[in-house]
Picture: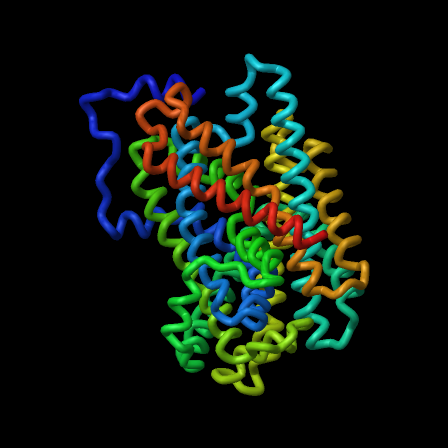
Length: 419
């Protein structure tokens, strides 16, 4: 596996190839997929509610999340490229001589990723339903159940359909990025207050929101998706500069969009209790006026397409890597995992609870499970046996541990706040 590749590196040869800026832009790919996954209805809802409830005070969670995803997704991508395996397969292979620990790790990862994915699925369906409900007036729980059935059909039609949907979504998210950025500028936020919001503080009652903000950006199964996608995109560790450019740029863009949403909400609808897409649309009114509501609703629907289709597939890929399944719907275990994740999400979304509460809780749950994946990733990428000369540097390891510790503290705070 990775140990062979790592040990065969010629010390006289440079570790990395050199690329022009044009070549780096042309080589982008896996990072865009990750950003497209975490910029779903959950991100829009969490950032809007954070801004409306706490102004710019929680802006530090966005800054932290940007740093965290750059550090962690780079590790995941590097692991995939060097070892030429997915993260789940790599963990199982590394622990093959420790059968008891291997089974414990497999069960722990499977449980956390599956439960987190189910919660995320409920949030994705609910976020999409909020958009449809605001336009049509149909209750969100009915729309969520109907949309969930549509997702079941979509994810079993074929990969070409999903690729088309992803392309459509990238256009929509790009438009939303421009609109939220312009709204942020038009709203003229207090820059001093904005910068103060980058100083970490947890105001009373904000612990669950902090967890949601981190959980909606630093998504555990995205690290598994990124490792698999990277190894399919790049086969030589010397191509790492392409991967790092792709990861860094896309994560910064995704984080900036999230920050723009929070700042816009903090400037325009601070103090408003956000319970629907109509409430959220208020943050866009300075720029779009009467078009704010339909624009946001359509955006929520479009963002939900990517997130809702990506979540069940992401969970299935992780479980397939852990337990040696085939990574396609011909394997019944892979196929039924997709169905179980979506059906559970439908049940969560169809409960009739406040849709915003469902989304916020789902994001916070992902933040709770995150530290498990983070510390596993840090450990594996620091092993010379696996990574050779491409193992994490001391600085990368320290940054990873700091990220892991912060996610652990916020995750525990979220649990306490939840109960």
